[in-house]
Image (tube, rainbow, N blue to C red):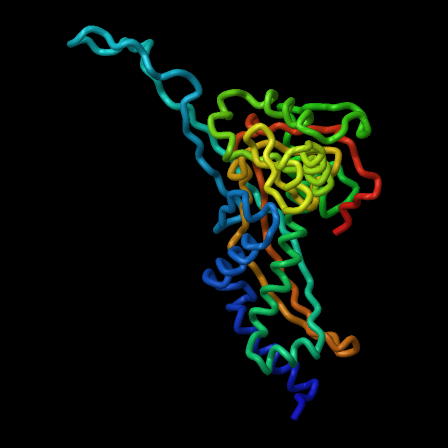
Length: 315
């Protein structure tokens, strides 16, 4: 016997309420599950360093040695001179989260199907995290406090934050995509960060990755043939070239993934409402996040790559 609309809603409210603790906040275990599902999505989020935050602000301490610490040893029985001793430099990265909101509409028929199978909680979590991960990636890449888009203007993303090392190829039609676009990026990176190229990444748009693959396929070799018939993980000068859905065609970022820190506050609120005319259950989720580079000096941004005018970054 099919469920009535009232029964559907009552069961749905009960099921969704299982996700919610007092005050509408997910309990710590559920918040961890939400963050884990967010990271598991195939976006830039699953490669960067995600830091769960227990408060709206957080400081991450950095410690390291900026200069040589090894010295010539003095004669036996003598201590190293004070001028030759080394001490580490310390810095702090401050994360200050901004609040964001998501609204998910679940039609009655979707609710009924999932209530009968006992999977509504997972459905709600999956629906929210799948889309939220894409929206967060958009903010991570295209966020710019000077943007006319109020969402993107909330904070600066990786393109806006990368200012120390910029390779400008000129107008967006000045250079075709080939190995020639990646060499200047590598040369612009300070040598001290180049110890492990395989751990670094060129983050490019899907169109740029396709054009680079095509440039490799033009070679009359077995390697060139393989680029046409199989999906390859491209590499340029020892550095993997990674397609990132929302990266503009005209730009790329060269760094290592864990250099990008995404802070997500654990207090994730979930609330529900009903729209009886539209026959949907509404789930509203709010969360807070911020992102920073650990070492902005270890980031190279390229601009002016050849753009494909038919490519769009609509999300």
